[in-house]
Image 1 (cartoon, one colour):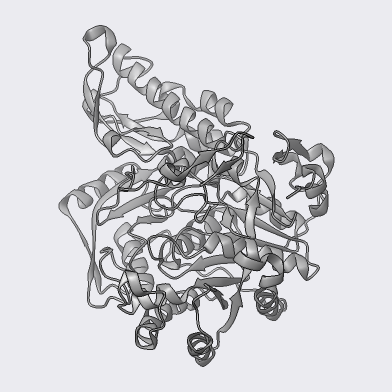
Image 2 (tube, one colour; image 1 turned 60 degrees about the vertical axis):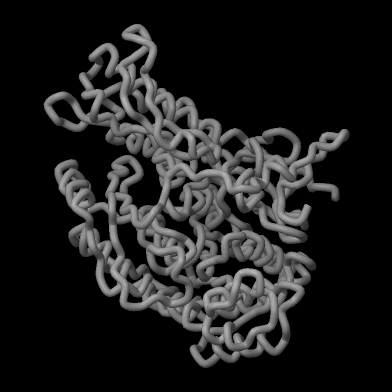
Length: 551
């Protein structure tokens, strides 16, 4: 496969050569100066989400790339605005995060590994702040920090359960002050969330400066600005703030930038990447992490509220195997025909369609077709959707690229065209002036289908701290399992009659939201018994295989 010169890919979008900054041969940064050069042009935004996936995922990124390919085949200037892969999942359960088969991004190996160094820069900025905080603990200046109340955690872009809880500062007085500490995976770092939500260098520095890193001996909050960290962190992140330009396997443009975890942070690509796409493309295809209950809710209630944008509609990715899983089929048998399990799984899909409607958005169902899917079962799903006024498209982008995505492109264009006269207006699940407890209940009841929410004693203490730090009117970022609508991954389908339990609340003052943790969500994942890293091979010509499923 021969890739197009990256400047040519940028030119297709209308980007001038001065704004496309090559990063190696087939990658580029896009200068922030390119924003605002198109005279107020505004493309149409399509949000790609999904039902709750099975552990391997349902191909949401693959379908996002496929839709962009299909739209391009229909003569549209379309761009995919997607998240950057994290090395943790790449070497862990899921493998690479650049799509799959004929509907993937290129150069896939580079994107999945070091790319343009954005995640390394975020890791370094995170740990620079950690070093400055501990330096202040050691010297007692420029601000005194209570070593037992340091809140800031170190980060590493790798799944490593052994770093979840550590002790630092051992070795005697010359080497530090001993204390318990912890690591987050880089995608869960607040610095990642901040980068994804910032609208420029000034905003980036403002957000970094207000990170709460700990408390002084008299209990007052200490922020990153108090240890003189913000400007140095911006220096590390300056290049990482620029969106990355790559291409699909068919040469179409894609903006890949930032990658906060969907079940921990807000799970969306950057505000700057989305705005760049909207300024230059007819249609912008962007996805949000995991199912609609996690990624899409955060995209709408957090990212859109922050950025002042709103999608024209939702493409909801569905697979027959996931519906059968939610209908009670055994994991080893979800590929087999099973009408009863499929129909039972429709209750799960229906809840997601209700959630889409709660935001006032139209939807198209996209079926990522697998070879074993039967026409009879596809017809069952098509009839289910039409009964609810939702069209369905079968996509074979994985095997056929843009040619296999034309039906999907047509259904999405029809949805978008219907909204041209009266585009959907923002409709959030809660007002910022509501209490944190009310915000969490609004999400849990509307999107998850919970009866109520319980807050542990620890969570209530955390909420009191959030209020004292001035964060009560921030949006809520829910940290929840992606495998269930509830907080219990063992409850597929459409759980009813359950109470969601919030066990911890963290303030991300720089990102501009509070994180409500439920269930057993961890901010440092571990590797599975059979890590994806074991299947990777580097060939004599330097070619890397095994990064993607099926290689």
